[in-house]
Image (tube, rainbow, N blue to C red):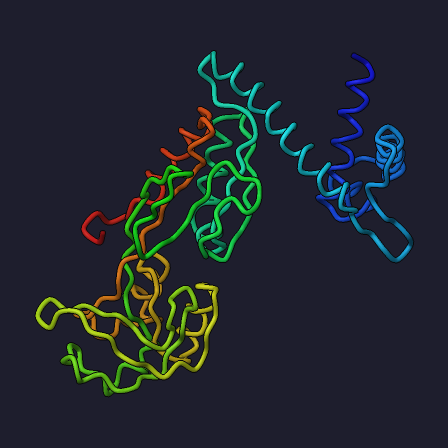
Length: 307
């Protein structure tokens, strides 16, 4: 039993070093002396009879067998955490580590805040948020939940998907850009506006818009700046670089304060579904279920009339 305990300690030390990218970085991050981490990894290599890390003063590299050992150790840690969480949850209390992948903008704007409030409510829960760019690559890294935006319904038998919200998007621009733009132009009345392109859309310069009378139309805009980061799209719009498609909740305060103006409000971009996904092969923990409930409540529009 003691040998198993020592081996597990060595494996977790190895995982910490790989996660941090070095012994000194791991020591700083986890509050463990680098010398102790080095001894643990050396002992693990001796137990396994192979090199896991190539380390020199100028080089830190995980070997192929080291990478496989790292993945196995992560899976082992996850199974242990799930077992401990299940034992605690038998008493009705959420607990354990909950790993969440989430687009950076959502993490910064709302999901991080929801996570902090959730941990304050449930002291036995730990949450790790990994920021993504929003493209469809759920579970490329270990995660229990993936928050994923999508223009189309998500269909994948290996995952369970739940829609959290259909996010409303609007066209906005700095007030000075509104001159010369009709409040409700016809389908052919759009000039090639200077614009900001979001690369989440397949063609950032071609916008799909819908009008109650004119129906759906595609317009072409003069993209001056493109990015995969919606926070940068908003900053460029505030600076007057061009008009932009933004989530209403992201720019609501800018509109109310007059920093941004809604452009052609009768024309609306497609809504973007925000979904939470988790592997269908793995039972969702009580912490995961309750966190999804917190996401549903936290992402609900503040003004129900603005859904």
